[in-house]
Length: 338
Image (cartoon, rainbow, N blue to C red):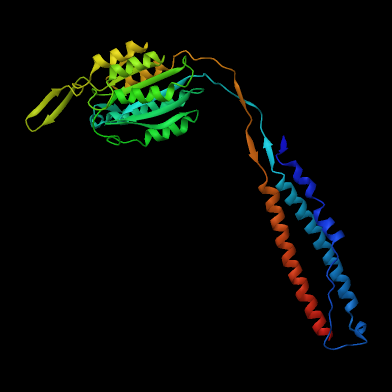
């Protein structure tokens, strides 16, 4: 259906007619340089009738243009059908490690070896898209922790800012405790039954002012549940001029601390050694029970004001051109008559 956001603008419709009625037109005195007592014999009567007919048409065009301008000022909108928006009530914060160790290329996506951050973006991006009804936030941490996106229903923005993140953006070290502390600060004012943090890292706490277990105790007191994900392969073949050898690229991963953080807050610790396991972890996180709330309804609106506004501008342009042509023709007719 069509809806007018500012219907009161319709009261301005008779404004030009009121101005015309109350304000007298300025008297125009035309004094000819040469007076011709027998001017009618030059046949100007036919021209005057033509000018009157054109003026009437111009008047109607101006009236239509004014009506279109009034309609545009009323801000017409097309209202679509109501759309139900599910709202789970969960406030879910993602904390992603951007330290230098995330450069390790021990993940494979579509038969191509990629670094850990690229794999995280690939899987977490799909996870974000599925979180319909949750308010999502994004924390990026390295040597320090930064709030990249506050809690929002705008999943596209969270996903975009995650994709724009880069290794080393927050420093080369890893401040796990600071990331947890920042999440507690941003979630402590929310519903205590819906506070969730998903923390992904590939190393141990090597920076920051807060110890991870102390931050976990604080999170537990605030009823915030933390799911920790340790990312990185257990084994990788490294080739050099001396031959091939097997190494453990996740030797620095502090699984004991990550598991303790999850246990203290009632969450779980997951180990992601490849892309498939990482996808399974995020699929399992999708099964978290939501806090049901009333369904919100949204009605899409499409602005229509530019259609009558375009018509009004086009008609006024035509009126100006025709009035100019009429003035020129009348001037020529008078000049020829003289």
